[in-house]
Image (cartoon, rainbow, N blue to C red; front, top):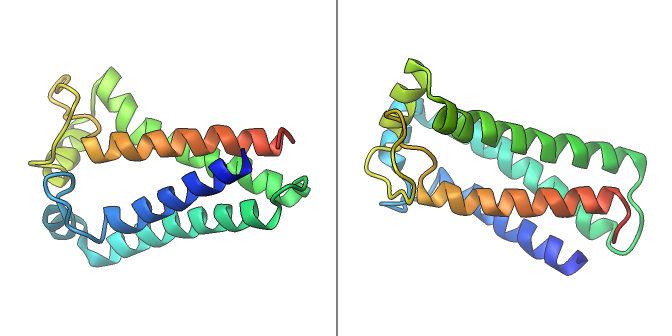
Length: 153
């Protein structure tokens, strides 16, 4: 499972790097994001996600085949929980339970014209195709990260 965990984290890191820096129309709307958020917020957000993903990958490589020390276990639990909660709060809570007017306005502007596999619910576009793909990697890595914390590999 270790090679799978490392491989998935490498892909996740690459996805985090390109999602806010490379125009992949119709899978993202970089122009709208920069116009609405600005480069500073975009770069800070990208630095946080890629930094955490790089740290997680480094921990996985460093402790390949070895038990994680307590600090690494705490980091993994906090990192993967933060990503999962952020993903839920940002995308799935508004999609399934209805967005606030602010969320609806934000996502309508940031993700206008992006491709989506999911139908619009309560006016909320929901996770676009790129984010659904990204979320699959986040969930897979989170599950493997927790299994690593539990000492399963």
